[in-house]
Amino acid sequence: MFLGAPAPWADLATFIGLAALASAGVLFMWAAVPHRAKQRSSRWMLIALLTTYTLYFGLLVIDPIASWALTPVAVLIGVCPLAISLLTLSSFTHPLRWTIVGLNLGLSVFLLIFQHQPSMGPMLAFEAVLFTVYLGCAIHFWFTYSRATAGAFITIAAFFAWAGVFVAGPCIAYYFPNLHLENEVWNLPKYVVAVGMIMLLLEDQLEYNKYLALHDELTGLPNRRLFQDRLVGSIERARRTGTHVALLLLDLDNFKLVNDTAGHHVGDQLLKHVSELFTGRVRKSDTVARTGGDEFSVILEEPMTRADAARVGKILTKLLEEPITFDGKSVQVGASVGIAVFPDDAKDAESLRIAADLRMYAGKNAAREEAAANAPVEPLKRKSPRAVKTGTRLPGLQTAE
Image 1 (cartoon, helix red, strand yellow):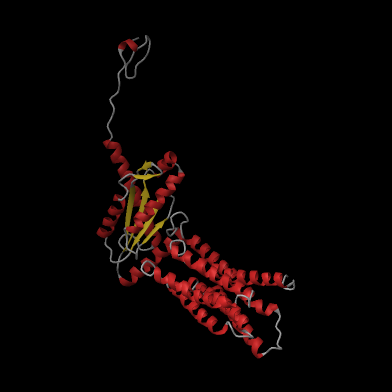
Image 2 (spheres, rainbow, N blue to C red):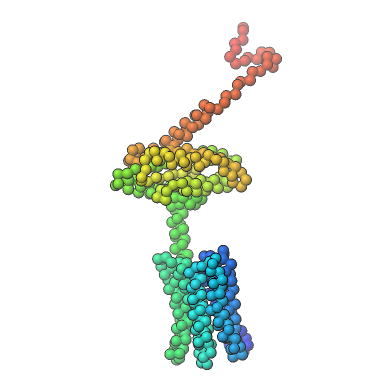
């Protein structure tokens, strides 16, 4: 819009456009670094790149007045990232950090060689800086989304093509000066990058929906559907190898009381805590699932015996014997466990689940009966004879006619 303005304003528009394009690429690279929030050196690297690139573009635009300053700034473009990396080498190192260092050292050498050429020097310098920035974007994106999907492939390829535009432009201008290409041709990689990113968003959403369909949203554990699939698979493997599979059903005691007295948010925290406890006490080859509101199921695969399963069940229930504090509120729940072993107790997944369920409720009822039998009985309080009104019939006594 403003390149056709008088000289000072056209130069300012050129400077703003180039600086914004380079800054966008640098910020994109910084956003793709996974450690940026924890490492202060990442912020130093960001500031160094933004400052040196912006300063270099400003000097190129006002050339030849400040051409003498191009050399020290070109040196700073390579030296600053290297100095930051070396100063923080003892505390932090990462492949992307050294990628930035290598790209900027190469850019610095290129600028020192070509920036003062009389004919194409300034254009080569512009294009070299932008090529370095967007090649860095392509590498950072490739590192972040290194997965075999259409969205990742299209976006990464488009980023490399976008960087290649800044090489193809000078080559065509030098070897084919009469060839004119419309701006849409040069901007095509940008559109492809946008399309690829939209595809990545859709892929992520589909993957998340698939995850939600098979996992409990609160605890992240497998839900009943995934648990059922894994139980069937475990039984089939045990049937082929002639081994055992144990199923444990654990139902939390007094969980409704926790929700009613401490609130549902405390109940949710309790479920998350229980899921972490159970997951941390079984093998990675086993499965812990949340199959109900306060019910957890555990699949224990080979080698496994009934005694082993009983020992694991005792360990898991013992984890809940101590009170747990959430938001200043102390809650205590126990757990009732039912154990069934394939093929001793059942021959298929559904029958095995029913057997474990029945044993779990039998254990829960036995615990209630034992608690009721051991509860102290308060003696009946007799009323004083003076408190009995005339004509009142007391239970167990017959009045004389």
